Each structure stands twice: as C-alpha cells, then as structure tokens.
Image (cartoon, rainbow, N blue to C red; front, side, top):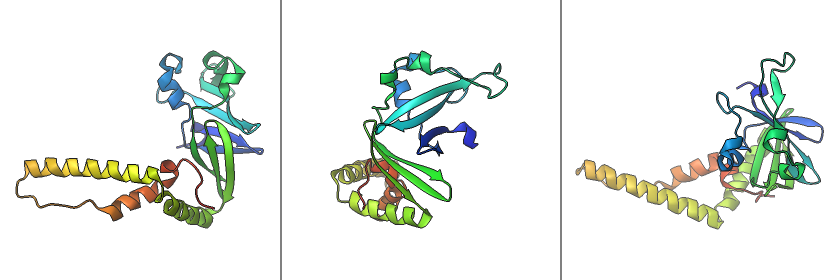
Length: 192
C-alpha cells in the first residue's frame, strides 16, 4: 500500500501514516454521508488540538485537480467544526515515525497518552501489555467467546465425522493470537 493511500495524523509537526480507518464507524452510522468511489472512497487527515483528536480534512478523488488529484469534502460531510472531534473512537493507534514508532492512546476522542519507541521497545511493550491484559475482564470475555466458538466448531466437526476424537481448546494458540493483535484487543495503555 502506498503511504499516499493512507489516512494521516499530524502530531507535533510530524506527518504520521495511519493504518486505522477511524471514520468507518462514523460512515456506518451515517451511510448517506459516505463518499462514493471505488474502495473506501476517501482519505482523511487528523490532528490533535487541546488534547482532542479532530478530523482536519476528508478528501475524495477528483481528476479535475491536476496538482493533487483530490478535493476536500469535509464541509459537506461534517460541516460543523465542533462535530469534527472523533468521539466515537477509543483505542490505541500505532504509527511508524522515522526509525521508530508512535503509540497514541485515545479515549472517546480525547488524548490519554503518547509513547515513542523503537522496534525493540515496541516488542517489549507488546509483551508487557499482553501480560497486563491477561489480568483484565476483557481478556476473560475474549477467551470465553473464543472457547465457545471453538466448541461449536468442534461439535459440528464431530457431527459430520462420528469417528473424530475430542480436541481441547488450545490456550497457547489463543494467547499467541491475542499477543499478535494486543494493540487491537487492549483499548488503553496498561503497561508502564
């Protein structure tokens, strides 16, 4: 994916490409406002001001604009400036920056924390975050949901193949999957 195809967060003068499509929940709720076009159909730019995450611009493809190939539609989609705070988002945003990463914690559109780290620090953070996450009710709920889904699949498999033996829920495999996506599962910074 080309960095120009990504949404962007401007933070402390840096332009940070984002993997997260923060406007998707907004467009699911307000489907009539979604820009038409192939794929997602828009590019969004964000910034943080007064500890709030705000939509700075929403652009769509426009062949008439020879300089950028885009045009702004922010005033058509979110006309009021006070509605541009991204209150519908809570979670962790991980973005590459120079030779490292920036991790931003957002809670209902408000900035809760920023961490800058290199690759080794990020891996250590993920491991620590996972250890703390395992102590939360969110982990227990996620585990219960995964175990229930596994048992339903096993029942279906045994129904189709009566000779199939019993397989137990693989906790180690589950934990490996959770660790791989720990920044998605944990919505806040838990590790120091």
